[in-house]
Length: 103
Image 1 (cartoon, rainbow, N blue to C red):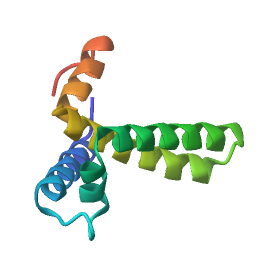
Image 2 (image 1 turned 90 degrees about the horizontal axis):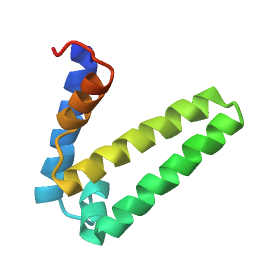
Image 3 (image 1 turned 90 degrees about the vertical axis):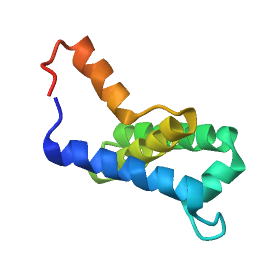
């Protein structure tokens, strides 16, 4: 179950990602540049951020875990956009797995 704030945050961030993918100049937009570089670059960034999150957790550095997890979630949203998957589908999968009530 997500709170309205979290749900709104992910929806708005996903919309920004989609907007920059379609209309932003890769010279001026990190998101547009990721899409211009292709799926392999997006996958590489997700992998890098996952490793950085793991290393921060291994070092017991909670500030870095928060920072790196935010990076990982952001790049995961970019990956979902690249794959044409709405983040709500992932939320629904979690709801189904844990038998949570739909909102």
